[in-house]
Image (tube, rainbow, N blue to C red; front, side, top):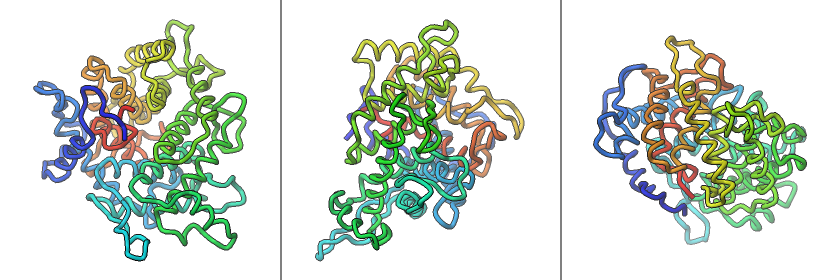
Length: 422
């Protein structure tokens, strides 16, 4: 179990807060209307989780549930990534699929579904498990891909592995040795196993795929499992997925994680005054730093349990946070008009920016910057609960933008292990 973050809330309290929000019949505000936002609030709790924020989350989750496709997925061109992010949002919103009751025969009954959108969550988990366990001779074993998905690639693989790993904990899967023995026969398919074991088998295969796909020379990952190319945004996605899999009881190669950590650290610009502290797109191109990649890199370091006890980590974190301070204004800029593009990779940047700020546990920064991030996210929500697709400035459509915006607002609730301080 993740320890309680100093001065923070327990996950149980966070879940209770969200549950109350989902049950509340609050009037829905329109896009761009003024929010409560914690200004004038009398407690830290209100500053972190405003009334409009809770209402927005509930509306977004309802939209996702209503717009799930028949096979349990969301989206098309980035279907794997969209489905993984939507599943994570549903889990963060209090829906869960856990092991059913133990039967006298020694097996398990049907899974227990809890929460307002548990049925949709189960379908999403099944879809992702099916993709993880598919046998496709064109791709390496364990690569989570959909034939109609042209955009997700290793980004989607990482997000899907993360979602399956987050779901795995409560499912009560058999040990991997038993599953391996069952699947050793060539005529067996994963669909013959109960869902928990399908997920366990899928995460195992996905982890091995990620381990094999790491570029041995740089420690990074590329767009495809066989790439010798490497870049930072994919690398941090793989690290988060591998960390979640390890937390769920799946063995992960320590050497892979050490090389990945080194890649992230070596991607920081420590020379240029204007770009000082920023993390780059590639460690070989330190001039291409950005707020989104810096926030993602810091979130990854925190996810690895590196909060600055090591002096070298402390310096990297402090410089990274200072870079985020200097560049936040551009990230929270909201242009008027339905088809405004907004800052490049705005949703991605705000999602990781919220996590980096929250996990850094710097109360001054959190009080100053979290309300600004929240306002920028809330301003992009439509009346139907979905979030504006920024006219092509990010891969993915309205399913992606709605899922990742919802997750950003859910960060302070700590209802996912990835949102909790290790």
